[in-house]
Length: 123
Image (tube, rainbow, N blue to C red):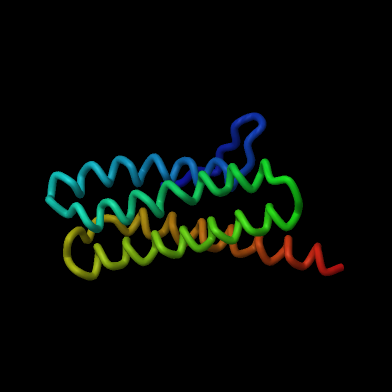
């Protein structure tokens, strides 16, 4: 489960997306042992891409670049949600609701960041 801790110099979305990526990597290893290679690879790609794009956004060269990278992070979080829902509903693994909750949390945070950033550029 994602925590509310902050590391010096890091912000909430950095920490949450990093923690989520670590959880996804661990879960990816488990899926591979179940021979669920296609779904495992898709989830690994989208789940780790969230944090990578957040990091790129935070180092962005402009507000437009920041919004673009955060929007990509949001899309990747939504895709991760899709794969996790698919895993649960197809009876591959019913015990990953905590990962789905974490993905939902990331979607909510990233949605707010994108919306607020877009509103700030319009004023």
